[in-house]
Image (cartoon, rainbow over all chains, first blue to last red; front, top):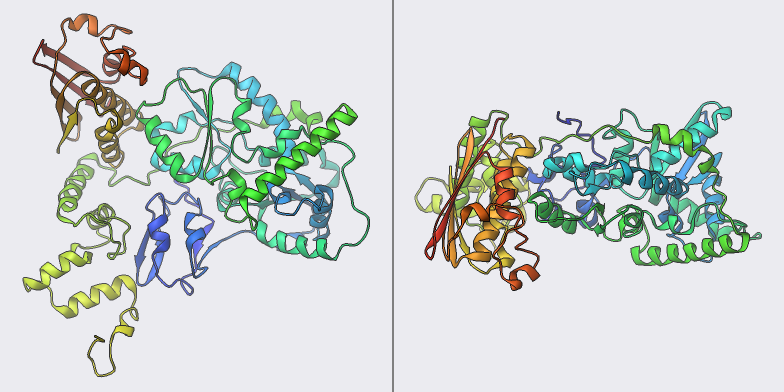
Length: 456
Length: 138
């Protein structure tokens, strides 16, 4: 079975894109090429990790969300916010205050996603008893960018992905079950990243997501910041703990892994994940039962749509954990309403298996793919091998691939061009035209003098 | 298609290079991911064997549309008793090697498990030759 749904939230605005290739250089899956002066994303390879978004100097790379317009829907409107959203604000603002400010944007109710983590912990304890130990380690399904990275680049590991929904899906399912009286409900998720938007729009391992729309966290952050600044009245504050204290840290790195029995590792950051998955795939990692993985450094606190500093966010969530621990101690209990539905949620929390994607495949026909690979090997030894990127591909190897896929020609390489010009196989005009085709028509304009000579 | 890799005895930090390279190629060929994984595991174990026991070795990989054939020839002490070497848990690795997390005696049995054909020959005092084949269709 193959998964061929390539929906993406990361988009490029070609009107803004200046073709600087910063994104192409950082893309961990080599999914970006420069053509006609603009960056373009290969949909079959992109995993929506957002590394390109972080480095774009022209803000041409954007995340397509569903926007705040959803609050105009004629429905009972629910906002799900992750704990990292609360961690965007200085500790002088309480969680209750922040959630109230979110509500004022136009929601009927606001729920913190991490309330669903108490349920996840119980579920993990059950799963540890059931799992097939021949398939080790189990890989967390929490981070959708990691799930997609595995689908495209580590297809043999897809069956190790935990078949359980993520906390925001559980939180949404809980709201659907517990707020039935409200009639038609519309659930929006305030997202710290692009991958979670894709997970809501085109989920892997389930047919439809329980979430109706995703809103860019920055947008909500701006409105809440304004409300909090203008706020003068008495402060709202929690009187009891509505979830176990460490649940607030679940989306960061290192908490989730503690709830899976046995030996476990927490890995954050795309490069770290890639290095580790490569080892794992070659059988170089043994005796590990569970892998918690987050595409972003510091987990969701480092999400591309989080406006604040990731380290401050982590520290604030640590403070919240302490506060919840204090409330738990004083009251001697935690009152998490979601757990009243634990039985019902247990029935619906599983996902279908995750299947590989074809992002790397050269040809469906093995014989043809092999011929193409043979050509790539030859081209690769011919190309200079220092990955300058002037051809519009991130590495010489990617150019070789593009050539056999008939998306580029060998003359795209500036070094090969020089040789071709010397041997009179390519005229300077032709070489000029090639560069223009890659880097855009006006890209070479500034080097030309009005009298036709180049600046020296 | 043919590939060759030189393997340096004792260079544990570089072990895995050939496995990683070949795996990258196989992933682009529409081969069942689980078969790719079996090959990657066998290649890695074979590389580690040379690194842990021999002075140096050469790995020759040939692949066509039906199968991958790997030939590993090393110069080193060789294997005295091949039957025993194939038993799970048997290892002649030094304490040093074991401390690095290698030499648990699972390497050769693991190669056997992950390949369709495996042939091990050795001249004690000279070296070892390992041939293995994995078919692309089950």
